[in-house]
Length: 464
Ligand code: BES
Ligand code: MN
Ligand code: MN
Image 1 (cartoon, rainbow, N blue to C red):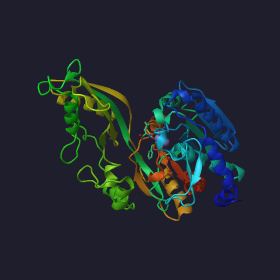
Image 2 (tube, rainbow, N blue to C red):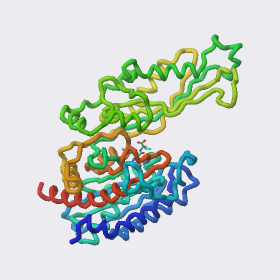
Image 3 (cartoon, protein in one colour):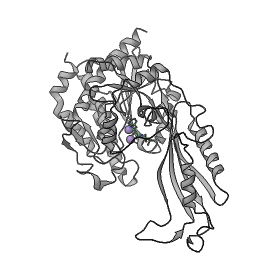
Image 4 (cartoon, protein in one colour):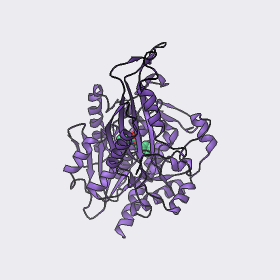
């Protein structure tokens, strides 16, 4: 039997070429003008699952974009691994800032990726990482090395909130039954530090509107005597943090989970260079909640950030005006035990409360999702750790990520199974940004590591 490494060496060029073809398809779920491309991408994913050895593949219609389903059931007494991923991508904007067109993939070397990286929208998030699973499946079926049953569920709406996926979960619980869910849609610490993502943050996204006078006013005639909604909004936003950068919303921290010293210590072992961190994003100094490290601020602590703010005159030159309205989009990243609906409600109440009587305030909730955390002593975690040991020669470091995949907490609700997040992307891969890329080394290492997860998970499960 050929090892994953030998099989990859033999098929490397084809594996890269196939991913490049997939990346040429602009499957932007947020923009309806790409609808045809999104649907074509679903078809391409379906074909790839068939070619990789799935016995049954299907395009499952939903009220939104379809879910691609595939399976190979070899023995009902064996465990079942369910692979989740997404074939949709973020909009490529701002297009001007790409060095090459976002849907014309090119391979270029970088400092972190001397073996080359594929530059394209979706290269890392999540087509490249999702396709690692398709190629790992091909290896296992072609080499008689599939130790258990496998199901694939690849969706096309992750970047817009996975609305149809919940609809699909509700209706297909039996068909999707599994022993573990495996996802590669996160990152790793560095190329020589494998890590398993043990947590994702939740999200509450709101939009606020502050209204003062019923029309824009002359700032000389009325200035100083009438509340300026932009001044007021700025002050209200500033007041959402205190001098220690704690969030001031009453009750906001009430349910925030405290981490065990053991996990905090283990997290602290992750290599981190503050000077590198600052220079990569060109900041003179770091900033954040008092009493926590940079790593902790970006993972195990909840946050509140303004994503956009507008109002008044922003055209050429100057216009003297007191605007009637001011707006902001605000997101809160949440941690385990904080309920996103409850936090949205707390925000709304507080924001209305701190508004002076000279203005009126509207809070419009957008979307949200629960945080996720998984223990490091589960069979699933152990299997992932053993897999990394085989291909990296060292155990993985558990890592809480700051990002969100809201559907993961719903998997537990509908399918009662644990999720393992084995990510192969790097923070420098620029997901959601111009010049997104995925290292070829990372891509191939992922394909190599995944079959070992199947092997160890099946072994541990059968012996438990
Ligand atoms: N794959 C990302 C989430 C991610 C990236 C988690 C890196 C951990 C490390 C996912 O596609 C994403 O972008 N999620 C969104 C939320 C969603 C509701 C649009 C996010 O985190 O902003
Ligand atoms: Mn993703
Ligand atoms: Mn994303």
